[in-house]
Image (cartoon, rainbow, N blue to C red):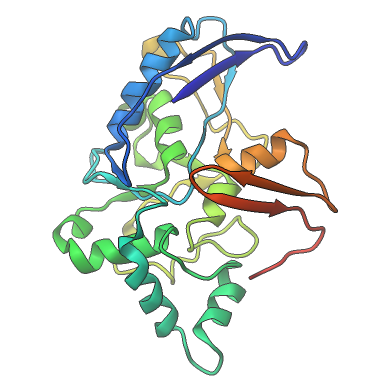
Length: 259
């Protein structure tokens, strides 16, 4: 977990802090919270911070119960146990056209093991008791933003918020990136809380007043590669190649696309 405090007028980096959290394809989200607090302390705290936005790995599945407690460790994007669930989801939509075409038209992409929708299907198939306890589903950076704002005690589950980049990577948001397709989700879809999808410059909450963070405006954040594309000011006609734990090629189009 990395914390960078910078002056938006001068562009100067004021201070930084970082802290490790467990590796693997399955991690308890509370370990991210602990690492964030350690990294913030290493950066000197947030006393002089007025706005904060969280970027994080996309597609992970964080499931919370009705009291906002983590039900099981989060399945991350690189956990491939849901590959079979992806194949099943595609096959179930194979009608007059192919299942792949249905998904691409509905959500802009075809399910693969990384997408949250496949992980929820895996949970329903393999851990039905845990699946029955799910009251809310969010992604890694959504969880941290929510905790910074005070979490369940201050906001309830309805205070969970996300951005269009992370929403679009769930597999159950329409091609506009602004509306959920609850018909795609499994059973009890109507009763499960999903983070509301914020506009790019919207303030989704303020920091937890109990921790002295009340003056900090919280932005909607972004998925890591989407944030990188914004950071390099990617525009139409250009592409970005990112090589790390994954390989990503990103480009900006003036018209909507599906693949």
